Length: 180
Image 1 (tube, rainbow, N blue to C red):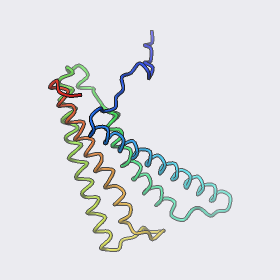
Image 2: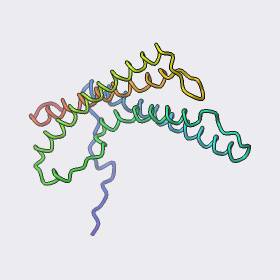
Image 3: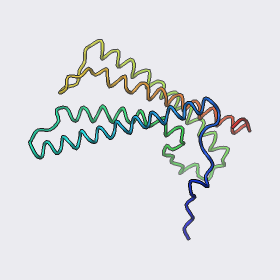
Image 4: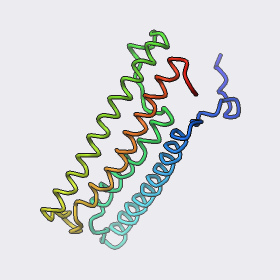
């Protein structure tokens, strides 16, 4: 017999209650909304380009460049929200029989690793932007400065690092019977 799917009004409110958590939650949600709008715009450009190629044999110049830059920005914008919602894909093949305490420790370790990697990617995105700015590197078809796309990635990964630090910290507080 199939299990009943819990209704959303039966679930406890997952939003953080502390000021730092609320700030990161709301910032991450705004980031995800911005990523969604970017993705919708990129879909529109792609559809317009395909239809233009089909009807008039004139696609949008640089459509692939626009899609690449927009998708990179969208992914960087979505990741912090996924971290705050605990919505990353978890493969628990080896840990499904582990105790909740062991899984909690592994989740905190993963959050700390994610935090470190996100901050490194953010830092290197800004370094890459600076280097692309100094060298005057541009996209192939549109001739747009390449540093623009690098600078759009840095803030998303920085926010991801902050959210990962927060979730690791919250996991430690909850495992020690601390605050909510």
